[in-house]
Image 1 (spheres, rainbow, N blue to C red):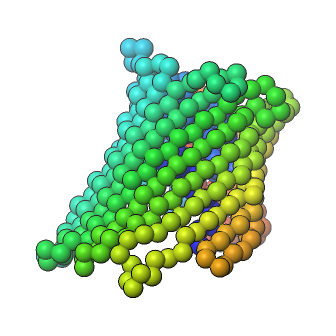
Image 2 (cartoon, rainbow, N blue to C red):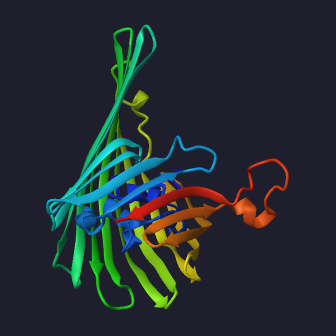
Length: 341
């Protein structure tokens, strides 16, 4: 069963970025303002940021971390990342008024003399500001392709994903200062097997919501989002004996995510956040309701334009650290360091 809705495929991948602040504050980049990670949800804001950053997903290894730099030159803004969002390279560009991100990943290897495996992923996102629905709105559109193939003794297996997405985020002055937030996407997945059978899976997603990202006190910032969404999955192709799987439907009613930041003195920021989802899932004659709830804690350390953000390991809070040996209850989990120019 699909336990979580994939809102966009491409435009929501920022929710999987390594930045700990995003993780703690609900994991949805559409709710961020004045944070460089919002550019991966809405590339039209690329020109608003100049920074260098690096981060790691875990405390034990930096092999899954990423690095990026965005800077201005000659009136334009340029950027490049390494190993971000599972792409080996991303190139970012904004001349002012709009922005774009081009992403690429390519792998080829031969595990045996008779087998060759290839995987190529390409994505492009474009965004701008438009005068629509609210005081102004961020608009983003994206497309991507992921092609994997295996050649084995002149037989071929091929898997391909083609996806498209779009998102609109309005900015207003009422209680929900991010309203409306509307996102839609489609992912078309097909597999060609070694025996010349082809299977097709199509996912269509849509969600709508509202958000608040504002200081509610001098030293307190609130991030909140409320969404309702649906994902529909259909199947077709050369299934044996006409046994095509039943279509699937997943409805989020609703999803609530966000968090709060509290400045402690001039250097330290403490964060706490949560994500709550209520899902209705149906496939054929089967249906069920499920509830999921996750919490996260984090900390930020600021020195002028230099920022270190980290998530706090849950084991550290519940059980305390090991006094001698062991590393499971270390204080910091994921870690990111950023310098804003």
